[in-house]
Image (cartoon, rainbow, N blue to C red; front, side, top):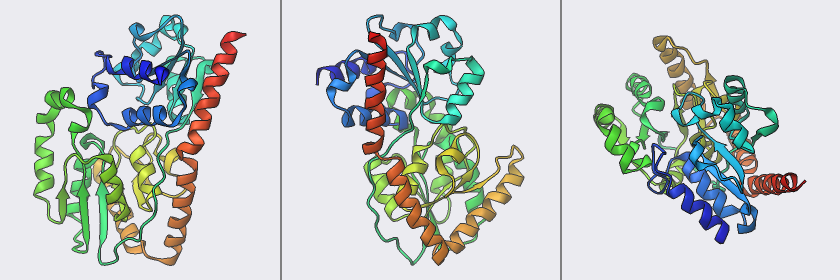
Length: 328
């Protein structure tokens, strides 16, 4: 495990990240851990794998430098990709979606010869029959991605047969991040606690999120943040939940053709009405035979396309080819 230990030690010691890796269990940090879990140690030989941080100090001259970028182009840690000097030091940039790749290439003129798209992956989620006495909604991501918007819609549903589980906290990114930003979200979390038929669960470990998803019917996610992939949506679809969201960012690429998506609109009143209509339609039609056929196809497709069994082969082949190219 010498190579994996080297890579893990380096990412754990990176103090320039806004979130400390060993304290954070966000999507990209968990993807990094799962990659280490699913690939053999020898796959990482000669590889310097950098997570989400375009920092000159993380470059290693004697290694193949691979930046794995999950961030959006406007985030601080990505800005050095606008520096030709930094990009020249990189061998490759791996993006988690075609949408994200296109944004970075357009914004920073990164050479396509250095750009690779390898999508995110999840561990297989076994299906369980969902309860039929009510419809369970879930919101399981950070608050700034659409929680306030969702609460406004949910309060106006007037559906006593519908419950909303809210798994949202900034503690997911560790103490450093929580200490810096927790006060900003105290009000919205308090509002969650006081909303009828809503259950505010705060920070929930991913294994328990999966258990909740198996009992959930709809991932209600009015995304107002440009997702570069959306692992929450992938896990929801794999567990047999219908996704109701917006088409902002890479959501369409990740969720089509299964999700119910509305057009993102900065006129939030208008978008709120459209999202409410889409959500009510999903609630009312969830148990229809046509929708259940779609849900079955969705589960099978997503568990196949986003499996680590499939993705680990892509990563292994990429690292092998990178080493072969360097030796030429």
